[in-house]
Image 1 (cartoon, one colour):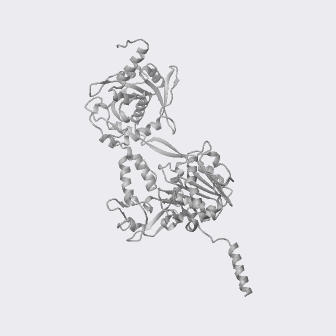
Image 2 (cartoon, helix red, strand yellow; image 1 turned 120 degrees about the vertical axis):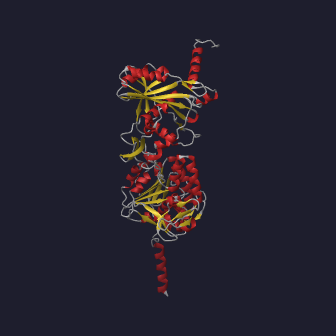
Image 3 (cartoon, rainbow, N blue to C red; image 1 turned 90 degrees about the horizontal axis):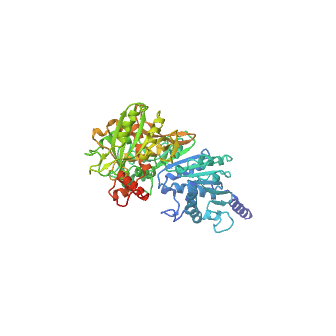
Length: 602
C-alpha cells in the first residue's frame, strides 16, 4: 500500500517537473491560439487544417537545418497569421528575442495595435506571459513586448537606429518588397537586421511579402535562391500533383484543367483533394514557398475571375496590382508592350494641320553631327497629346544655315481646323552633344521666346524638371532633365489604348507630317531594365538594339519638358476659348498696361 502511494507521489512529481511535450509551431497554434474578432472573419480557436498549406511553412521554423524561410504569396492566404503564430510560439513555448520588421515605423505601430495586442489578449497562454499594457512597468509598450526569457521588438525598415540595436535570435520581415532601398544612409535594412543574429547558432530569418516588379522584387530574388516550393494538389481524375495555375483556369465553366489528363474540375473538387509542397530545388538549404489566391479557402474562383476582368479593363497599373496581390507573382513589363506596330495602327487622319482640341504647342530639338531633328507636340486637357510635325533639317550644326532653317520653322503659324493660328510656346534644345556652344548661342538669343537649352541626366530619383543654372560664356539658362522620369511617363501614356483616358497619344497618318514607321521604331526603341549593383536594384533605360535611332523618344521627352517649363493653365485656356499664343499675348498686354504703356482701351 505504501509502495503504491509512493509511486503515485513520484509520478505526480515527475509530471510537474517534466518538460512539456515537444510541439511544432502549427501544433502550438492548434492547441493554444485564438483568433481575434478584429483581425479575422473566422474568429475563435485556430485550426491549421482550414488552410493546410500553412502547416509546412510554420513547422519549417522547427527544422534545425533551416535558418532562412521565404514566403512569396498573394494576399488573403493567411500569411500574417503565420507570422503571428511564430511570434506566439516563441513567447509561450520557446522564449526568444524577436524582431518584427514592417516597411515603416507607422506600419509597425499599427500592426502591433491591430494584430499583436489582440492576439496576446485573446490567447490565454500569451496573456499570462505578457503584462497588461495598462501596467506601468514598461514591459508592454506599443513597439516592445517583454516576457520571461525574451522580448518582441517591432521596428520600421526606414529607421536605421532601431535596426542596429541589440542582438536577436528571430527576425520576421513582413512585406519586404515595400522596404526602402536604404535605412537612412546605413544601407539595406534586411542586411542590417541580419547582422543582429550573428551571435545565435540557432537563429531564424523569415521574410514574407507579395512581390512587385520583375527584376526589382526583393522577395522574388530571395525565393529564386531557395528550394522554390509550390503548393500542389492531386487531380481528381488522374491523381497527378500540380500547383494551382492561372493559365489552367477556364473562365466560362469556372474550372481548372489538369495539366496531365486535361480533365476539368471545379473549385470544390480541387480544394477537397490532398495537397503537399513540392520543391523545385530540394538540395538548397533556404526554404522558399510560393502561394497564390487560387489555393485560399477565403477566395472564390468566380470572384477572382471577375476581378481579373475588371483589372484588365481599367488598364496596366490595375492589372499589375492584380497580378501581384492575386497570383503572388511579380509583374514583368514585356518587351512587346511598346511594339511600334500597335502605334502605327492607331494613327488617324487629322484633315488639318492642328486638331481642334489642341490648346498649346511645344517642341523638342535634338542635335546630331549632320542634322537637327525637331518634333512639335500639341497639348490638350488631361495631358492628351497630338503629334503635329516631325522634321529633319540636314546640315552642319557648326554652320549657321541649318540653325536658320530651324528658327524659321519654330516661328511659323500652325493652323487649327477652326482657323485659329497657333505658334510654338516653348522649345527645349539638347545641348549634350558636340555642338554645345552653338546650342547656347541659339538659345540665348531666343530665351525671350522660351527657347531653352537642356541637358538630360539619367538615373533614379532625379526630378524631371530642375531649376535652371546659368552656364557658358553666353550666360544661358540650362535646364537639367531627369530623363528616366520623363520616359516613364511617355511609355505609360503610350500604353493607354483608350482615347477618353488621360495621357492618350494621337498620331497623324498624313505622310507629310513625318510620322512614318521609322519614327515609331525610334519612339519605342528603348526598354527599362533592372541591374543589381552592390545588392540593390537599379533601373535604367537601354536600347532594344544598337541599330535603333532613338531620337523620336528623346524629342518627345524634350517637348514634354518644354510644356512643363511653360506650365500653362489649360483649364483656363479651354474655358475662355484661348490658345497658348493668345494667352501669352493677353498676359503681355496686361503687363504693359500695368507699366502704363497701353491704354485701357487697347
